Length: 290
Image (cartoon, rainbow, N blue to C red):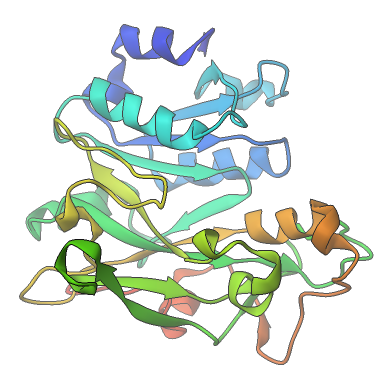
């Protein structure tokens, strides 16, 4: 269904807001929007909300399966503002996920277990959020794929990831409990082209709505427990968002485009589009879910 504004969608209080889980896709352009929507529908999200320019085309067969809102995705704090409005309108406890086009959610064993299975288990773990690593994908040949996007020849970095303690300004910058800032991928290798406040690759992409909860511009939440990678007693599930967004941006930005002839390096490997590869590389944690 099409909605003229986000406010109109929220006022209707559809199943995405009352039952969930709800996937929100911010379509900055049409690059792999088709595959992004199909991926998340196949993952088991019963409600998919697309925020996009009103003139951006969407395949007719998908238009019947999603909700679409005319939205200025390039406005200041567009994503944060929209997510927070959805949180405020959603019933407490509804699971929400957000991503951009050309991004794909993977969770442990997603080939045989749906996102509903994942969230059911996380509730049994008494956890209200799931940490995600945004794993950069990039085409192997930038001559053939000038925007760095290719599902068939996608590569990722097999190493070069690290974490630092997240300083707490309210406590003399001592590290926050069970919180880390994660780095790696293209944002680490090509950091001269990426502003410091955009170099982290962690994102709380899956979380439960509740009263007063707010997403902050750095992709963390106002409730600090939502920002933790695990509970105090054992490791928890983490997920991965395989994303062409950084590669696409580096190829479209005039300040970086002409200085990059390839994203390949000695630690590049083909992406297998399978959760096992991400777990083997340490980019996703199954926790106690076997």
